[in-house]
Amino acid sequence: MIENTLVLIKPDALQRNLTGHVVFRLAQAGLYIVGAKVVQVSDALAHEHYKHLRNKPFFPELIRYIKGELHGKLSSGVLAFVYRGENAVQKVRDVAGATHPEQADPKSLRGAYGRITTKGVMENVIHASSDPAEAQREIGLWFAPEEIVDLEPAVAGNASRSVPRKAKGGL
Picture 1 (tube, helix red, strand yellow):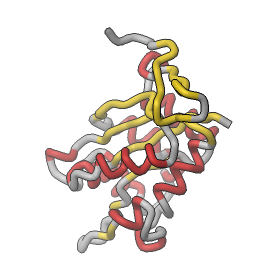
Picture 2 (picture 1 turned 90 degrees about the vertical axis):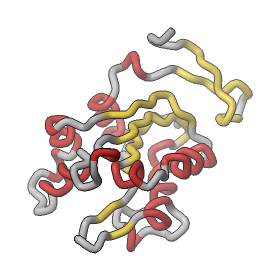
Picture 3 (picture 1 turned 90 degrees about the horizontal axis):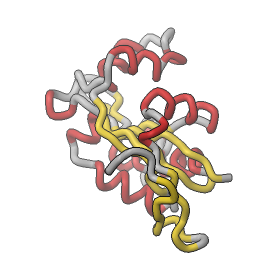
Picture 4 (picture 1 turned 60 degrees about the vertical axis):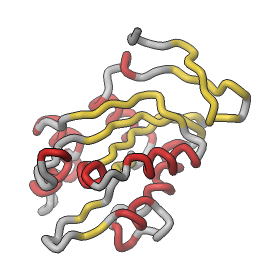
């Protein structure tokens, strides 16, 4: 089933210049980008995005983390993507790896690049939607409908070569 899913390259990954590694690995999984932007995460957006974790003891630190407050001025935003493809949610989760970097497969993004800092902050590089329903909720938080381009493969079965079917907005 063709799905859309949200991917966030988090402030720690931006600070460490890991964007290319993330995008490359997701392209290798046969997914393609239909929305992308740099976002300065507001307090309201952070709280709404992570509302399901509101009662966890780490919630205040998580909000500071996604807002970039733990990583300095150069990393105070996130790079938000909508990826599309066959079973996109699960493919992104497989590429991302387990949430906790020390439990993630070393070949996954979190296993390769995630870490626990000396201050005890878990940096896990990327956000991956948990399921298709959550992906749609998250995409609605981070993107307006006109910011998502409708793409279809240029060559049947080849998601790595895509062409716009109907661009919304833009030039």
